[in-house]
Length: 442
Image: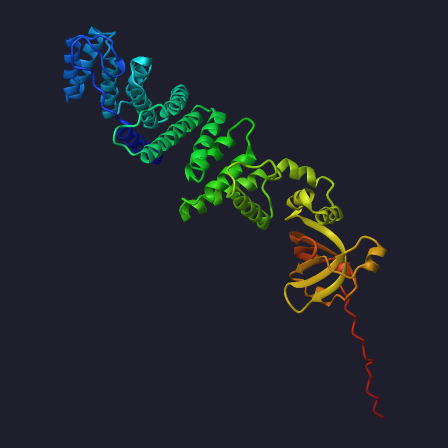
């Protein structure tokens, strides 16, 4: 929140300086100036306002302003009086009172100029950012006020002497600030859908902003129901933001990976989680919005896919490719399958682990026809597996770790163990007859 407040302070101060137009009522008695137009006020009112404006002691100035309002409750100069009020309270860091008098000025309607109302909305937003732990009602009011501020930006007249391009850039910064305020306030008010809308409005102007993308992820995550794919997409955009430092990017990536794992019910395949995150980072860097085509299987999807799953169904699905293969692989990666049948085609023995390449077979016909390996097992701590003969039929228990799709289809297994019944049997050594020495003659 502190960093956000500092950003808000800079934005408001810049906006107030760049958009500020000095407006004072005409000094002639009986006329009105500025937003008051031709409304009437007396010289006594004017002098009272001038005296209050000149007062430097905050407490004394507040008393003078209170006296003015009590004496002239319908004065045409209230727009100037309320401005003094909110500036005074803002300087004292009394932000609730600052907001109160910003609202009073805004409520004047046509009796206040567009610039005055713009400034009041800006200070309103600044004051909100400096209220610790705002209650939902205050947050909701801040959200509404910030969106009203957005609507008024284009109506603010360009100050004399300000370059057109610079003025356009200033308005752009103001819109970002107001939408950012609206989004943060919506989150505080538990209006997650409203926060999503406002953060997306910020990103429409500055799509690569780290903070807004990250906050959009939070907003998507708290909608009812949570929009998890959109949330992950927004976090990925934050992690790949061009204005993110290396430390920030690393931190967001760590968090993103944790979210992916949790979304999928605690995956047991690290390589898969890394691949899913890298794919998401690459896709999200090219688009602000998560496309409908992007799918990340949830824990419920994976549990359903694991029902009645067999190694035979895994082979069939992976070779088919497409979304079915993606779902099946996400569900099966990291799982241990017992006694996977295969025909040995290549053995690398004399090492630990022993590496066996074989073909998955389920029938005699498949066994006879198999000539190409489609499984690779790494078998630690079982050196006798290195003595398996080519074309032997074996059952190997192993853990799925990765696979290569067609055309060079290959499933890779770790922690393999060949069934003891299939290991080569050591031949018992032939016993040589023992000849007893001939008995010596007596």
